[in-house]
Image 1 (cartoon, one colour):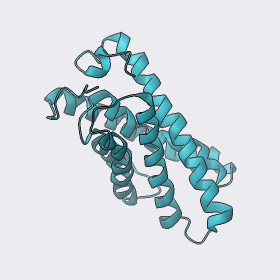
Image 2 (image 1 turned 90 degrees about the horizontal axis):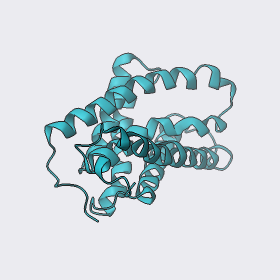
Image 3 (image 1 turned 180 degrees about the vertical axis):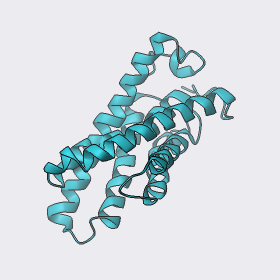
Length: 194
């Protein structure tokens, strides 16, 4: 079912995607403090269970706006905002965000931006999580073994992204739609779809 209402971005699309991205940029910054703070007591790769929060804007932005590029835009802007606020990972996050956003975008592109079902959101989150896990393994954890570290880290990252970013974004849209804040979007008018 085509629910994209065209592919051109409206002003409201840009504004809402930007609000989602900026809000999650702040959340990213705080999540980074948790990742490197109290959660640091949990050894890697186990800490990857909380990774999915970093993929929420990609999936949520796409589910709300339903336009080509929404996942890429929201994830990229959220990453830049978190960098501007200051992260221990520095500017590398401004590069990682678009990689994750592109991977998440791929799921919606595979369905020609016509399917906004939960299964597509879960696939988007899984692809974004896979890209994130691979990036981390190569950029940050290269010396660690693929068998004892890399594969478990990737698996936990993907599962976390599917649950937190995929299912979480579907639930957020379902909760937001009845409030009327999404009335300008197909996601707000077609509650049965997501």
